[in-house]
Length: 82
Image (cartoon, rainbow, N blue to C red; front, side, top):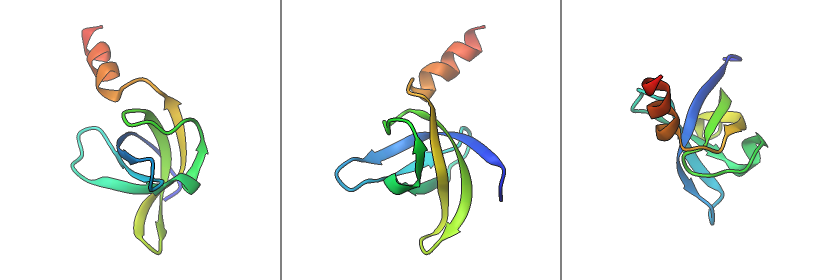
């Protein structure tokens, strides 16, 4: 599972240092921890790229990189308008 995937930060718990990433059109969220970040500011709604990998917690988003701090829903709406 080395392919990079794209999604958005669906839920982020700043005080606990973890959150969940969702892939557009999918119901399943993938856990990630602040320590799995490659770069970028963690913010709910930010678009990210990541790799899926197995940890002691199961399947998680690893090597997470913020690619746009813009809200994922806003970008999807703008893409549809063009």
